[in-house]
Length: 598
Image 1 (spheres, rainbow, N blue to C red):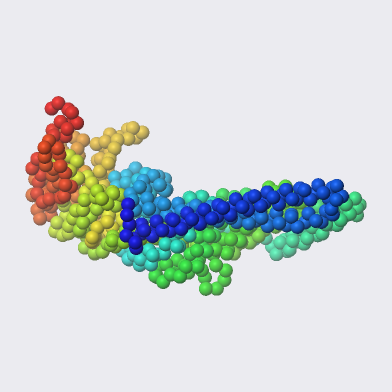
Image 2 (cartoon, rainbow, N blue to C red):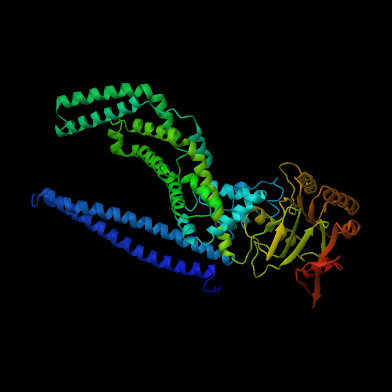
């Protein structure tokens, strides 16, 4: 697909080419460093052999050892750079996939947020493969994903939405920031779990007394000195051995008095500490960027205080403490760590960290989640520069021009308009099969979800009030709960009737699971009840008796329709909504088209 020079697609393509070239250079450097490291190792082995043969002094091996260590460090650095470059390539490949409508199945689908009892999520493909969440989400933490999911699951207050518009407008051009966030951490998705970290940080802290920390430090220094003394006497000095036994006994007595406090601290940090390096990296990036919109500066202020250590440095210290705990698996630390009170001193430092910083952890994670969710919507806005932000009204209603479905290929999405403003509150949509009725419901509903989450919309204009959305489009039976499709639809309809006012309902083939007589009476009574509660909405139907209800409720309701035409034995659909009631049915034509003899 061709892109104009200044379009997001062209920018992604150019940056992808640049990152691919950089990766090629990095891979070449990695291979060179790998061979050099191998050569240095061979020289070390050769030098040791020569020293054993007394052909050269052993100290001559020192230089190749230092060279080997240098090359190992450089190779590790090149490895990390190559990994980050691959993630940057993936970031731009995913952006191009979204622009070219190849994004389905790429990225996090958000299945864990699915709830079959939600009033519209399943009907409008909010979560799951090929969902709105999968299209939008670029969050790296579970908190960021959860924040975005919450915005897509219900309407936000209008002042918050306007604040998000400002923040998204500022974040939209910051492609470098979004790319940088995408390359942090060990995996494309992180396991940072805000609930575990917040719960750990919020538990009452029990810091150790200063004398206990000082005693642990002094004992470890004495033990270290005695160890050096013992080594210097080639493990044979009786005095050194006695001193070592003595200090070990004293340390054992000291440790026994605080063991019940140390062990829970050591084990308690294991679950909350996952991917602290990623969290520290995200905080570092957010602290460094210059932001001006009020919502973003408020988030930044919570992680970058004017006085004192920033959040990234504090989380970095906690990460290093966790690394010290993890290093106990090292064989050298296993041998000498107990004498140096390694675990005890680390536990004391962790508890001191929690005492000083535990109260700030929730606001740090809140800021990360908020900015990640905003960044996801900013990325969507960047990739759809022609999509406007919605306008908001205090009067219940929704009106828009050229609405298209955000999840459909733009080349196939046919725009339609909507205008449900007082006194008009109901569209009764009739039409033949496959003509576009259900797609129209989803188009309007999904754009309303985007608007009430703070995102741009797929339209040339959309104005709406804060609405409680409910849909019955894809209601299915439940074998587990013993509920038929018709009963499931009735339960959903009751849920829609109970939505907070003003409600916006989307009903597809209302009460299709019963006979025509009961359907006509029930559907008429339901839409009248919804309108009486101040709700607005759209219902589709094949039953023209419901179309007559629109005439009876005028001017509160109108009939509109989608139609098809038969040309040379082939059904043609234009998916354009028109006023009035549909005049023909295509059921028999469709049956014959698939080979049924009717």
